[in-house]
Structures are given as structure tokens and as C-alpha cells.
Image 1 (cartoon, rainbow, N blue to C red):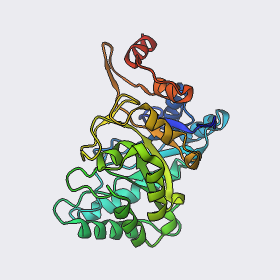
Image 2 (cartoon, rainbow, N blue to C red):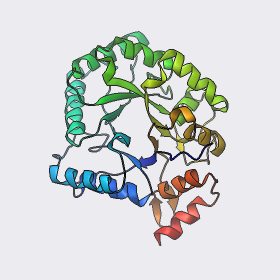
Image 3 (cartoon, one colour):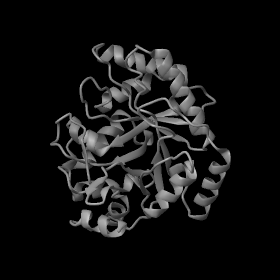
Length: 300
């Protein structure tokens, strides 16, 4: 593991009062040089207008603190399900609106769950996703949609590189679609993180490493192949510290933003964000086995 300056951050909030400026400030408080946010609640359609003044302040702060806009990611709301043609118009319209919001805040990467076919079958589900993406993406779209690797829970699509490849192949604007690889999800989908080189080779052969634009770094509460999708704190799950560190410091991925979506930790002070200490663990290359205690002390 070379001492490359790694690009690491976490999911941060985007509030009514501070919007993207607040997101940058939260990221900086974790010693992060990358971050990801939702532009509104992921489970509903309530969206506040983007405040351009706050966006400008956010960009100025990022410039001062050396956070590159290319390492900032927006996550699409997960109520969008492109795989099921029920509510197809709503899904397409809402995704278009979300893309407009992402363009407006000046971010280029939008992570999207491919969707669940809900009984329609894999082929029909993939066909629906392709159709929707072709309705949404145009040559003038400034955002790249990064389809997330999924755990394969229920009728989720995108739990194999082959399925993602089929979707990408069907999209007309090929340069507007890429992949976000989630370590918890690929573990739960059945990929063996004991040999991450083999996983990357596989990805490169099937999709192409140039399409891997975002990494979600999560440990998993579940064994490989469980199809469950339950994130665990860094180094505390079934994947473990060493394997996750190999992913983060992999030379082929040094320019890819790495985003923690690990759970908030239950403490005597309530649920608290672990990201400052997980990022420190990653930068120090040393496992912290008293994470909860450190978080509590820091918040007192």
C-alpha cells in the first residue's frame, strides 16, 4: 500500500439552512477530501429549491480546502425504480429533475440504484431500465449516472457485473453512464473480497475499469453471498479491515472517490457519525477497536 494521497469521504447531510455549504463543512469536520449527499430526502419527493448563493459559497470553500468537485457525488433518491414500468413517467420525470439539481450544484456524478423488477423478470426489468435511461440522458446532459452494484436482495437488478454491462450496452449516451462499486453489496452478492484483484480483472473484462467512477466503502454485517445488504462500520464486519484497505489503496483505483456509508453508531449520547474516526483509521492504516468510545469522547 503506497502512501498515495487517497480520496476519501463519507455520506454527509444537505440541510434546508445550509444546503451544499453545510455538506462541505461537515466533510471538512471529518478530515475528508470527498463527500456524497442527497439533494433531498431519499424516500420522498420533497425538494427545496437549490440556493445558488449557498452553492457558490460551497464551491469557494472547496477551492480553499482543496476538495476537487470531481470527488463530490450525489446519490439519487431510492424511491426511483426504473426497472418496474409502474409509475414509469414519475420515475423518469423525477430523475430528470434530480439531474437538473445535480447540474445546478455543479456536481458531475450521480449514483443510482438500477432498480427492482418486482416480478417482471430480469430481462424485462433491464429493458425498462434501458428505456428509462434513454428517455433521461441526452448528449447535453452534464452528469454521469453511476449505476450501483447491488446485493441482489429480492428482485434487485445489478448484483452482477454482467447485468450492469447489459444495461450500459443498451444506453445510447454511453459516455453518460458508469458504475459505482459498493464493497458491502458485492460481498453480499457473492463476490469474494479475499481476491479483490480477481474482482477488478473481472470488472475490467466485462465492463471496463474506465467505467468505475465511484466506490462505496462499507463493511458488511453478512457473510459473502447472503443477498442481504446490511452495512457495518469500517473493519467491524464480515469483510474486515485488511480487505477493505486493499480496496481503498488499490493502485488502479487511486483516482476514484471513495465514500463511506457506514452506519451511525449507537452511543449513550444517541446515534453519532463515525466518519471522522473511520477516515482517521484509513489514513493511519491502523484498525481502531475502540471506535464507539472515541466517538463519544469527541462529542462530549
